[in-house]
Image (tube, rainbow, N blue to C red; front, side, top):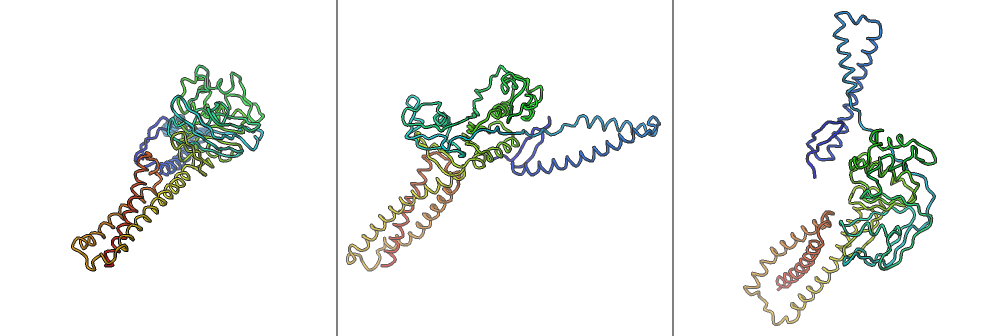
Length: 419
């Protein structure tokens, strides 16, 4: 949506008048140019440092200007802000879980009068990467808690697999103690953490997640949203896990960290359950999606977000087509009956009214076909299915009506034109 990007980097603001895709291309080019300029600058500084150390009498008048220039170069180099490094993500090795991770059958649950799950049946197996999508408050986190055995549903059965080691990323960050430092939240007050069987000092480990020594000792309540998310990742990856549960993991993550997380999850050999509104993240990571369709109904689709849109669009079109066929058949039957029931009663020549009707039919058909094409184009756009259910239903109903009206118009035209 954006047509202008304001970037904050290394304590400076950059204004890019373009969309995000173009910004990424220009940014990459700018970084390449900066690297070349810095390389030339460092080369010149190194040459001047060699010169000042070779015994040249720098106190001579003709060399004093060169010495002052060297001092300026040194100061400029000292003030240079380097690019922030990338997070280093590494998953802990864990034993394999059983083939079945979780299976639920005819599960229903409600809070008060609100039905959040209604007769949901599905199963998750080892190696599955499941995305859960739906509107806010639909019941996505409730479904996750049922999968993990943390919540007993009102109805239905839940069966959990064997040897499950679960690591949970909580969107509310409730796992973090705000009165403890970032390091203490990860290492539980210890100076070291165990990562894949090797002991690492907590400060060095926190550095992998872009925490300086000072920020690692900072209380959590003073950390930014992005720092808290990186802290949750740091905490999660200290624990061996064969099941990862990520609830809105992409919030507040910078683009580089998000790309690294996606790569890690794609290569992850365990099971992933993630709740997310990030379409690109779902497309890149998950192998199937569970979609909340209203009134607690949950339906499973193969693939990521775009795959769900295509499949749901095809299903909707198929339903509309079936309705249209019924309407067209009924209209054709009526038209045939009207043209064959009493041939002798129909005059051989058209009346004035029928002639006017025949002349108006091409225009009517053209208008209906134009509207039909427009509706088909709208419904082929994935964003169409992000609208409210009432808008989608209205468009589908109108399309079925147009199909029926076209069938009637063509039948009437044939009847009148064949007189």
